[in-house]
Image 1 (cartoon, one colour):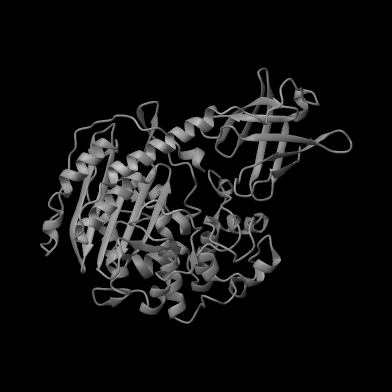
Image 2 (cartoon, one colour):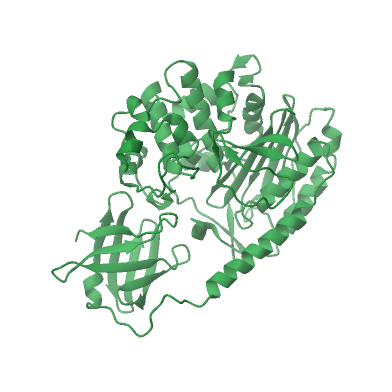
Length: 507
Protein backbone atom coordinates (compact mmCIF):
# COMPACT_ATOMS: atom_id res chain seq x y z
CA UNK A 1 0.00 0.00 0.00
CA UNK A 2 3.01 2.33 0.09
CA UNK A 3 2.31 3.18 -3.50
CA UNK A 4 -1.04 4.59 -2.55
CA UNK A 5 0.40 7.12 -0.15
CA UNK A 6 3.93 8.05 -1.30
CA UNK A 7 4.59 11.74 -2.04
CA UNK A 8 7.42 14.22 -1.81
CA UNK A 9 7.86 17.08 0.65
CA UNK A 10 7.70 20.64 -0.63
CA UNK A 11 8.15 24.07 0.92
CA UNK A 12 4.79 25.27 2.05
CA UNK A 13 3.69 28.17 4.22
CA UNK A 14 0.33 29.32 5.37
CA UNK A 15 -0.79 31.82 7.98
CA UNK A 16 -1.93 29.98 11.07
CA UNK A 17 -5.04 30.60 13.09
CA UNK A 18 -4.95 28.74 16.35
CA UNK A 19 -7.88 28.28 18.67
CA UNK A 20 -6.84 27.80 22.27
CA UNK A 21 -8.42 25.40 24.69
CA UNK A 22 -9.02 26.62 28.22
CA UNK A 23 -6.30 24.63 29.96
CA UNK A 24 -6.64 23.43 33.50
CA UNK A 25 -3.66 24.41 35.58
CA UNK A 26 -1.51 21.48 36.54
CA UNK A 27 1.90 20.99 38.05
CA UNK A 28 3.37 20.16 34.62
CA UNK A 29 1.51 22.73 32.52
CA UNK A 30 4.51 24.99 32.72
CA UNK A 31 6.66 22.35 31.04
CA UNK A 32 4.53 22.80 27.92
CA UNK A 33 4.88 26.59 27.88
CA UNK A 34 6.98 26.41 24.71
CA UNK A 35 4.75 23.87 22.95
CA UNK A 36 2.80 26.37 20.86
CA UNK A 37 5.91 27.99 19.41
CA UNK A 38 7.56 24.63 18.83
CA UNK A 39 4.43 23.15 17.21
CA UNK A 40 4.06 26.05 14.77
CA UNK A 41 7.75 26.01 13.91
CA UNK A 42 7.65 22.27 13.20
CA UNK A 43 4.41 22.59 11.24
CA UNK A 44 6.05 25.06 8.88
CA UNK A 45 9.37 23.22 8.65
CA UNK A 46 7.63 19.93 7.84
CA UNK A 47 4.96 21.54 5.60
CA UNK A 48 1.97 20.22 7.52
CA UNK A 49 -1.34 21.86 6.49
CA UNK A 50 -2.90 21.28 9.89
CA UNK A 51 -2.87 19.18 13.04
CA UNK A 52 -4.27 19.01 16.56
CA UNK A 53 -2.65 17.86 19.77
CA UNK A 54 -3.89 17.09 23.28
CA UNK A 55 -1.97 16.15 26.41
CA UNK A 56 -3.56 14.40 29.38
CA UNK A 57 -2.03 14.06 32.84
CA UNK A 58 -3.55 12.52 35.98
CA UNK A 59 -7.10 12.62 34.65
CA UNK A 60 -6.95 16.19 33.31
CA UNK A 61 -6.52 17.78 29.91
CA UNK A 62 -3.56 20.09 30.34
CA UNK A 63 -3.26 21.07 26.67
CA UNK A 64 -5.60 20.81 23.67
CA UNK A 65 -5.17 22.93 20.60
CA UNK A 66 -5.27 23.05 16.80
CA UNK A 67 -2.60 24.41 14.48
CA UNK A 68 -2.75 25.32 10.80
CA UNK A 69 -5.63 24.65 8.43
CA UNK A 70 -8.24 21.92 8.15
CA UNK A 71 -9.35 23.29 4.74
CA UNK A 72 -6.77 25.16 2.68
CA UNK A 73 -9.18 26.36 0.00
CA UNK A 74 -11.62 27.91 2.49
CA UNK A 75 -8.90 28.97 4.93
CA UNK A 76 -10.58 27.17 7.81
CA UNK A 77 -8.43 26.60 10.92
CA UNK A 78 -7.87 23.40 12.85
CA UNK A 79 -9.25 23.65 16.38
CA UNK A 80 -9.32 21.22 19.28
CA UNK A 81 -12.82 20.27 18.06
CA UNK A 82 -11.78 19.42 14.48
CA UNK A 83 -12.64 15.84 13.56
CA UNK A 84 -9.98 13.67 11.88
CA UNK A 85 -10.11 10.01 10.84
CA UNK A 86 -7.96 8.17 13.40
CA UNK A 87 -7.51 5.10 11.16
CA UNK A 88 -5.80 2.16 12.92
CA UNK A 89 -6.09 3.78 16.33
CA UNK A 90 -9.61 2.36 15.99
CA UNK A 91 -8.17 -1.10 16.69
CA UNK A 92 -7.86 -0.38 20.41
CA UNK A 93 -11.58 0.44 20.51
CA UNK A 94 -12.33 -2.96 19.01
CA UNK A 95 -10.13 -4.74 21.56
CA UNK A 96 -11.70 -2.67 24.36
CA UNK A 97 -15.06 -3.93 23.09
CA UNK A 98 -13.77 -7.50 23.25
CA UNK A 99 -12.46 -6.84 26.77
CA UNK A 100 -15.95 -5.76 27.86
CA UNK A 101 -17.44 -8.99 26.51
CA UNK A 102 -14.70 -11.08 28.13
CA UNK A 103 -15.38 -9.35 31.43
CA UNK A 104 -19.07 -10.23 31.11
CA UNK A 105 -18.24 -13.88 30.51
CA UNK A 106 -19.60 -13.83 26.97
CA UNK A 107 -16.23 -14.31 25.31
CA UNK A 108 -12.85 -15.88 26.04
CA UNK A 109 -9.62 -14.45 24.65
CA UNK A 110 -8.26 -17.98 24.18
CA UNK A 111 -11.22 -19.97 22.91
CA UNK A 112 -11.21 -20.60 19.14
CA UNK A 113 -13.04 -17.88 17.23
CA UNK A 114 -14.94 -20.53 15.29
CA UNK A 115 -16.68 -21.57 18.53
CA UNK A 116 -18.50 -18.23 18.44
CA UNK A 117 -18.84 -17.97 14.64
CA UNK A 118 -19.35 -21.35 12.94
CA UNK A 119 -19.19 -19.67 9.51
CA UNK A 120 -15.69 -18.33 10.21
CA UNK A 121 -13.26 -19.78 7.66
CA UNK A 122 -9.64 -19.10 6.73
CA UNK A 123 -7.53 -20.43 3.86
CA UNK A 124 -5.71 -22.77 6.25
CA UNK A 125 -7.87 -25.38 8.01
CA UNK A 126 -5.68 -25.70 11.09
CA UNK A 127 -5.71 -21.94 11.63
CA UNK A 128 -9.47 -21.87 11.03
CA UNK A 129 -10.17 -24.25 13.92
CA UNK A 130 -7.52 -22.96 16.33
CA UNK A 131 -7.13 -19.21 15.92
CA UNK A 132 -8.45 -17.26 18.90
CA UNK A 133 -9.51 -13.63 19.46
CA UNK A 134 -6.13 -13.10 21.15
CA UNK A 135 -4.27 -14.39 18.07
CA UNK A 136 -6.25 -12.13 15.78
CA UNK A 137 -5.90 -9.06 18.01
CA UNK A 138 -2.09 -9.35 18.18
CA UNK A 139 -1.54 -10.09 14.46
CA UNK A 140 -0.23 -13.65 14.54
CA UNK A 141 -2.60 -15.22 12.00
CA UNK A 142 0.11 -16.00 9.43
CA UNK A 143 -1.80 -13.94 6.84
CA UNK A 144 -0.18 -10.86 5.26
CA UNK A 145 -2.09 -7.62 4.77
CA UNK A 146 -3.94 -8.29 1.49
CA UNK A 147 -5.20 -4.69 1.74
CA UNK A 148 -6.13 -4.40 -1.93
CA UNK A 149 -8.99 -6.79 -1.23
CA UNK A 150 -10.82 -4.02 0.61
CA UNK A 151 -9.23 -0.76 -0.52
CA UNK A 152 -11.63 0.96 -2.91
CA UNK A 153 -14.00 -2.01 -2.97
CA UNK A 154 -17.76 -1.77 -2.53
CA UNK A 155 -18.08 -4.90 -0.39
CA UNK A 156 -20.02 -4.97 2.85
CA UNK A 157 -18.39 -6.02 6.10
CA UNK A 158 -20.00 -9.45 5.90
CA UNK A 159 -18.71 -9.89 2.35
CA UNK A 160 -15.18 -8.95 3.38
CA UNK A 161 -15.46 -11.35 6.31
CA UNK A 162 -16.57 -14.15 3.96
CA UNK A 163 -13.66 -13.48 1.57
CA UNK A 164 -11.05 -14.15 4.27
CA UNK A 165 -11.20 -17.85 3.35
CA UNK A 166 -9.48 -16.99 0.07
CA UNK A 167 -6.59 -15.00 1.58
CA UNK A 168 -3.50 -17.15 1.32
CA UNK A 169 -1.09 -17.08 4.29
CA UNK A 170 2.63 -16.59 3.83
CA UNK A 171 3.79 -17.67 7.30
CA UNK A 172 2.83 -20.50 9.66
CA UNK A 173 -0.06 -19.69 11.96
CA UNK A 174 1.05 -18.24 15.31
CA UNK A 175 4.71 -18.10 14.22
CA UNK A 176 5.28 -14.35 14.27
CA UNK A 177 3.78 -10.87 14.23
CA UNK A 178 2.37 -9.80 10.87
CA UNK A 179 0.04 -6.81 10.68
CA UNK A 180 -3.36 -7.69 9.25
CA UNK A 181 -6.42 -5.46 8.92
CA UNK A 182 -8.78 -8.28 7.93
CA UNK A 183 -8.38 -9.94 11.32
CA UNK A 184 -9.83 -6.85 12.98
CA UNK A 185 -12.77 -6.83 10.60
CA UNK A 186 -13.42 -10.39 11.74
CA UNK A 187 -13.12 -9.26 15.36
CA UNK A 188 -15.74 -6.62 14.63
CA UNK A 189 -18.03 -9.31 13.23
CA UNK A 190 -17.27 -11.37 16.35
CA UNK A 191 -18.47 -8.49 18.55
CA UNK A 192 -21.63 -8.33 16.45
CA UNK A 193 -22.21 -12.08 16.74
CA UNK A 194 -21.72 -12.17 20.52
CA UNK A 195 -23.42 -8.89 21.46
CA UNK A 196 -26.31 -8.93 18.99
CA UNK A 197 -25.51 -5.33 18.01
CA UNK A 198 -23.68 -3.88 15.06
CA UNK A 199 -20.06 -3.07 15.84
CA UNK A 200 -20.87 0.63 15.52
CA UNK A 201 -23.79 0.51 17.96
CA UNK A 202 -21.83 -1.56 20.45
CA UNK A 203 -18.88 0.85 20.45
CA UNK A 204 -21.24 3.82 20.64
CA UNK A 205 -23.30 2.41 23.53
CA UNK A 206 -20.54 0.79 25.56
CA UNK A 207 -17.61 3.17 24.95
CA UNK A 208 -18.56 6.49 23.33
CA UNK A 209 -21.55 7.22 25.60
CA UNK A 210 -19.93 6.48 28.98
CA UNK A 211 -16.83 8.41 27.88
CA UNK A 212 -18.92 11.37 26.72
CA UNK A 213 -17.41 11.12 23.22
CA UNK A 214 -20.26 13.07 21.62
CA UNK A 215 -18.38 14.14 18.49
CA UNK A 216 -16.95 10.74 17.55
CA UNK A 217 -18.45 9.08 14.49
CA UNK A 218 -17.93 6.11 12.18
CA UNK A 219 -18.87 6.86 8.57
CA UNK A 220 -17.56 9.20 5.91
CA UNK A 221 -21.15 10.31 5.33
CA UNK A 222 -21.41 11.49 8.94
CA UNK A 223 -18.00 13.13 8.68
CA UNK A 224 -19.20 15.22 5.73
CA UNK A 225 -22.14 16.42 7.84
CA UNK A 226 -19.89 17.65 10.62
CA UNK A 227 -19.41 21.44 10.83
CA UNK A 228 -15.73 21.03 11.74
CA UNK A 229 -13.77 18.30 9.97
CA UNK A 230 -10.38 18.14 8.27
CA UNK A 231 -9.59 17.39 4.66
CA UNK A 232 -6.36 15.54 3.98
CA UNK A 233 -3.72 16.66 1.49
CA UNK A 234 -1.12 15.05 -0.73
CA UNK A 235 1.91 16.64 -2.32
CA UNK A 236 1.70 16.73 -6.10
CA UNK A 237 4.90 18.19 -7.52
CA UNK A 238 5.12 20.87 -4.88
CA UNK A 239 1.42 21.63 -4.59
CA UNK A 240 -0.85 20.48 -1.78
CA UNK A 241 -3.89 18.80 -3.30
CA UNK A 242 -7.03 17.82 -1.45
CA UNK A 243 -7.55 14.05 -1.26
CA UNK A 244 -10.82 12.19 -1.60
CA UNK A 245 -12.34 9.50 0.60
CA UNK A 246 -12.06 6.46 -1.68
CA UNK A 247 -11.12 3.51 0.48
CA UNK A 248 -14.50 2.21 1.68
CA UNK A 249 -13.09 2.21 5.19
CA UNK A 250 -16.68 2.22 6.52
CA UNK A 251 -16.94 -1.51 5.80
CA UNK A 252 -13.56 -1.94 7.50
CA UNK A 253 -14.59 0.24 10.45
CA UNK A 254 -13.48 -2.17 13.23
CA UNK A 255 -9.92 -1.87 11.92
CA UNK A 256 -9.82 1.84 11.09
CA UNK A 257 -13.15 3.62 10.76
CA UNK A 258 -13.47 5.95 13.76
CA UNK A 259 -13.37 9.71 13.24
CA UNK A 260 -12.83 11.87 16.32
CA UNK A 261 -11.18 14.95 17.79
CA UNK A 262 -8.53 15.42 20.46
CA UNK A 263 -11.08 16.38 23.11
CA UNK A 264 -13.11 13.18 22.78
CA UNK A 265 -9.94 11.14 22.52
CA UNK A 266 -8.67 12.73 25.72
CA UNK A 267 -11.54 11.03 27.56
CA UNK A 268 -10.61 7.75 25.86
CA UNK A 269 -7.01 8.20 27.01
CA UNK A 270 -8.10 9.04 30.57
CA UNK A 271 -10.03 5.76 30.68
CA UNK A 272 -7.02 3.84 29.36
CA UNK A 273 -4.75 5.43 31.97
CA UNK A 274 -7.43 5.03 34.66
CA UNK A 275 -7.43 1.22 34.43
CA UNK A 276 -10.73 1.18 32.57
CA UNK A 277 -12.47 3.73 34.75
CA UNK A 278 -13.76 7.14 33.65
CA UNK A 279 -15.13 9.46 36.31
CA UNK A 280 -17.26 7.13 38.44
CA UNK A 281 -17.89 4.50 35.78
CA UNK A 282 -15.92 1.31 35.12
CA UNK A 283 -16.19 1.35 31.33
CA UNK A 284 -13.83 -1.58 30.64
CA UNK A 285 -12.93 -4.24 33.22
CA UNK A 286 -9.52 -3.44 34.69
CA UNK A 287 -8.18 -6.98 34.33
CA UNK A 288 -9.17 -7.32 30.69
CA UNK A 289 -8.03 -3.82 29.73
CA UNK A 290 -4.63 -4.73 31.18
CA UNK A 291 -4.51 -7.63 28.71
CA UNK A 292 -4.67 -5.16 25.82
CA UNK A 293 -1.61 -3.31 27.19
CA UNK A 294 0.37 -6.50 27.81
CA UNK A 295 2.95 -7.69 25.21
CA UNK A 296 1.67 -10.75 23.36
CA UNK A 297 4.11 -11.06 20.46
CA UNK A 298 7.44 -9.50 19.49
CA UNK A 299 7.23 -7.17 16.50
CA UNK A 300 9.66 -8.43 13.87
CA UNK A 301 13.05 -7.55 15.40
CA UNK A 302 15.15 -5.07 13.50
CA UNK A 303 18.20 -3.03 14.35
CA UNK A 304 17.49 -0.42 17.02
CA UNK A 305 18.38 2.79 15.25
CA UNK A 306 17.97 4.99 18.33
CA UNK A 307 19.06 4.28 21.90
CA UNK A 308 15.90 5.89 23.28
CA UNK A 309 13.74 2.93 22.21
CA UNK A 310 13.59 -0.72 23.19
CA UNK A 311 12.42 -3.48 20.84
CA UNK A 312 8.73 -3.33 20.08
CA UNK A 313 5.97 -5.72 21.10
CA UNK A 314 2.31 -5.87 20.23
CA UNK A 315 -0.43 -6.19 22.82
CA UNK A 316 -4.06 -6.33 21.74
CA UNK A 317 -4.64 -3.29 19.52
CA UNK A 318 -1.61 -1.49 21.03
CA UNK A 319 2.15 -1.49 20.52
CA UNK A 320 4.20 -1.77 23.71
CA UNK A 321 7.82 -0.72 24.22
CA UNK A 322 9.90 1.73 26.25
CA UNK A 323 10.90 5.30 25.51
CA UNK A 324 13.91 6.46 27.52
CA UNK A 325 13.32 3.62 30.00
CA UNK A 326 9.64 4.47 30.51
CA UNK A 327 6.89 1.99 29.63
CA UNK A 328 5.06 3.25 26.56
CA UNK A 329 1.80 1.98 25.04
CA UNK A 330 1.18 3.51 21.63
CA UNK A 331 -0.33 3.12 18.17
CA UNK A 332 -0.31 4.92 14.84
CA UNK A 333 -3.02 5.28 12.24
CA UNK A 334 -2.95 5.97 8.50
CA UNK A 335 -5.74 6.33 5.97
CA UNK A 336 -6.06 8.48 2.83
CA UNK A 337 -3.42 10.98 3.87
CA UNK A 338 -4.38 11.27 7.53
CA UNK A 339 -1.90 10.27 10.23
CA UNK A 340 -2.68 9.82 13.92
CA UNK A 341 -0.73 8.81 17.00
CA UNK A 342 -1.97 8.04 20.50
CA UNK A 343 0.61 7.35 23.21
CA UNK A 344 0.21 6.35 26.86
CA UNK A 345 2.78 6.38 29.64
CA UNK A 346 0.79 4.29 32.15
CA UNK A 347 3.21 4.58 35.06
CA UNK A 348 3.37 8.36 34.68
CA UNK A 349 -0.36 8.80 33.99
CA UNK A 350 0.40 10.79 30.85
CA UNK A 351 -1.28 10.53 27.45
CA UNK A 352 -0.55 12.28 24.15
CA UNK A 353 -2.85 12.53 21.11
CA UNK A 354 -1.75 13.86 17.71
CA UNK A 355 -4.00 14.07 14.62
CA UNK A 356 -2.70 15.35 11.27
CA UNK A 357 -4.08 15.84 7.76
CA UNK A 358 -1.23 14.87 5.46
CA UNK A 359 0.74 11.72 4.78
CA UNK A 360 3.36 13.57 2.73
CA UNK A 361 5.83 13.15 5.59
CA UNK A 362 4.56 9.76 6.69
CA UNK A 363 4.90 9.32 10.51
CA UNK A 364 8.03 11.42 10.95
CA UNK A 365 6.09 14.50 12.05
CA UNK A 366 3.79 12.73 14.50
CA UNK A 367 6.77 10.89 15.97
CA UNK A 368 8.82 14.04 16.55
CA UNK A 369 5.88 15.90 18.10
CA UNK A 370 5.03 12.97 20.36
CA UNK A 371 8.66 12.60 21.44
CA UNK A 372 8.99 16.33 22.14
CA UNK A 373 5.94 16.27 24.42
CA UNK A 374 7.17 13.02 25.98
CA UNK A 375 10.51 14.61 26.85
CA UNK A 376 8.76 17.60 28.39
CA UNK A 377 6.26 15.55 30.41
CA UNK A 378 8.89 13.06 31.60
CA UNK A 379 11.28 15.87 32.53
CA UNK A 380 14.02 14.81 30.11
CA UNK A 381 16.27 17.10 28.08
CA UNK A 382 14.59 17.54 24.69
CA UNK A 383 16.15 15.40 21.99
CA UNK A 384 16.33 17.03 18.54
CA UNK A 385 14.09 14.48 16.87
CA UNK A 386 13.34 16.81 13.97
CA UNK A 387 16.97 16.78 12.81
CA UNK A 388 17.21 13.01 13.21
CA UNK A 389 13.98 12.34 11.36
CA UNK A 390 14.77 14.87 8.62
CA UNK A 391 17.92 12.86 7.96
CA UNK A 392 15.89 9.65 7.99
CA UNK A 393 13.37 11.16 5.59
CA UNK A 394 16.14 12.30 3.25
CA UNK A 395 17.71 8.84 3.24
CA UNK A 396 14.34 7.25 2.49
CA UNK A 397 13.77 9.63 -0.41
CA UNK A 398 17.20 8.97 -1.88
CA UNK A 399 16.57 5.24 -1.63
CA UNK A 400 13.22 5.66 -3.35
CA UNK A 401 14.83 7.60 -6.19
CA UNK A 402 17.61 5.03 -6.46
CA UNK A 403 15.12 2.19 -6.69
CA UNK A 404 12.99 4.05 -9.23
CA UNK A 405 15.96 4.74 -11.50
CA UNK A 406 17.77 1.43 -10.99
CA UNK A 407 18.55 -0.57 -14.10
CA UNK A 408 15.84 -3.16 -14.76
CA UNK A 409 17.79 -6.41 -14.91
CA UNK A 410 14.68 -8.58 -15.19
CA UNK A 411 13.20 -7.21 -18.40
CA UNK A 412 14.09 -9.16 -21.54
CA UNK A 413 14.43 -6.85 -24.53
CA UNK A 414 12.97 -7.27 -28.02
CA UNK A 415 10.24 -9.78 -27.18
CA UNK A 416 6.71 -10.04 -28.55
CA UNK A 417 3.52 -11.21 -26.92
CA UNK A 418 2.14 -14.58 -27.99
CA UNK A 419 -1.42 -13.62 -29.04
CA UNK A 420 -3.15 -10.81 -30.80
CA UNK A 421 -3.61 -7.79 -28.57
CA UNK A 422 -7.39 -8.31 -28.48
CA UNK A 423 -6.91 -11.82 -27.04
CA UNK A 424 -5.91 -10.33 -23.69
CA UNK A 425 -9.19 -8.42 -23.30
CA UNK A 426 -11.76 -9.74 -20.87
CA UNK A 427 -12.90 -9.92 -17.27
CA UNK A 428 -10.66 -11.76 -14.80
CA UNK A 429 -11.75 -12.61 -11.27
CA UNK A 430 -10.26 -13.68 -7.95
CA UNK A 431 -12.66 -14.83 -5.20
CA UNK A 432 -11.24 -12.36 -2.67
CA UNK A 433 -9.76 -9.54 -4.73
CA UNK A 434 -12.64 -9.26 -7.17
CA UNK A 435 -12.44 -8.38 -10.86
CA UNK A 436 -9.84 -6.90 -13.17
CA UNK A 437 -11.19 -5.63 -16.49
CA UNK A 438 -8.83 -5.57 -19.48
CA UNK A 439 -9.84 -3.71 -22.65
CA UNK A 440 -8.22 -3.01 -26.02
CA UNK A 441 -7.63 0.53 -27.22
CA UNK A 442 -5.84 1.98 -30.21
CA UNK A 443 -2.83 2.65 -28.00
CA UNK A 444 -2.85 -0.92 -26.67
CA UNK A 445 -4.41 -2.24 -23.46
CA UNK A 446 -6.02 -0.49 -20.54
CA UNK A 447 -7.35 -1.95 -17.32
CA UNK A 448 -9.50 -1.22 -14.32
CA UNK A 449 -9.40 -2.67 -10.81
CA UNK A 450 -11.76 -1.27 -8.18
CA UNK A 451 -11.09 2.51 -8.13
CA UNK A 452 -7.94 2.25 -10.26
CA UNK A 453 -7.92 2.87 -14.02
CA UNK A 454 -4.57 2.22 -15.64
CA UNK A 455 -2.78 1.84 -18.93
CA UNK A 456 -0.84 -1.33 -19.70
CA UNK A 457 2.58 -1.05 -21.34
CA UNK A 458 4.18 -4.13 -22.86
CA UNK A 459 7.05 -5.31 -20.64
CA UNK A 460 8.20 -8.60 -22.17
CA UNK A 461 6.55 -11.70 -23.64
CA UNK A 462 3.03 -11.85 -22.15
CA UNK A 463 3.81 -9.55 -19.24
CA UNK A 464 2.59 -5.96 -19.14
CA UNK A 465 3.25 -3.15 -16.66
CA UNK A 466 0.58 -0.89 -15.16
CA UNK A 467 0.91 2.86 -15.56
CA UNK A 468 -1.10 5.02 -13.19
CA UNK A 469 -0.52 7.57 -10.44
CA UNK A 470 -1.78 5.21 -7.71
CA UNK A 471 -1.62 1.81 -9.36
CA UNK A 472 1.79 2.00 -10.99
CA UNK A 473 4.44 -0.52 -12.08
CA UNK A 474 2.53 -3.66 -11.16
CA UNK A 475 3.45 -6.54 -13.47
CA UNK A 476 0.49 -8.39 -15.02
CA UNK A 477 1.29 -11.66 -16.76
CA UNK A 478 -1.25 -13.46 -18.94
CA UNK A 479 -1.32 -17.28 -19.09
CA UNK A 480 -2.41 -19.65 -21.82
CA UNK A 481 -4.33 -22.90 -21.28
CA UNK A 482 -3.61 -26.14 -23.21
CA UNK A 483 -6.16 -25.08 -25.85
CA UNK A 484 -4.11 -22.00 -26.66
CA UNK A 485 -6.54 -19.55 -25.06
CA UNK A 486 -5.67 -16.84 -22.56
CA UNK A 487 -7.49 -17.95 -19.41
CA UNK A 488 -5.67 -16.38 -16.46
CA UNK A 489 -3.64 -13.41 -15.38
CA UNK A 490 -1.27 -13.17 -12.44
CA UNK A 491 -0.24 -10.11 -10.49
CA UNK A 492 1.71 -9.61 -7.25
CA UNK A 493 -0.68 -7.46 -5.21
CA UNK A 494 0.61 -8.58 -1.82
CA UNK A 495 4.37 -8.09 -1.72
CA UNK A 496 4.75 -10.13 1.48
CA UNK A 497 3.27 -13.12 -0.34
CA UNK A 498 6.01 -12.89 -3.01
CA UNK A 499 3.90 -14.81 -5.49
CA UNK A 500 1.31 -13.95 -8.05
CA UNK A 501 -2.34 -13.77 -7.16
CA UNK A 502 -4.19 -15.52 -9.95
CA UNK A 503 -7.33 -14.15 -11.59
CA UNK A 504 -9.34 -16.50 -13.83
CA UNK A 505 -10.91 -15.23 -17.04
CA UNK A 506 -14.71 -15.41 -16.73
CA UNK A 507 -15.59 -13.71 -20.02
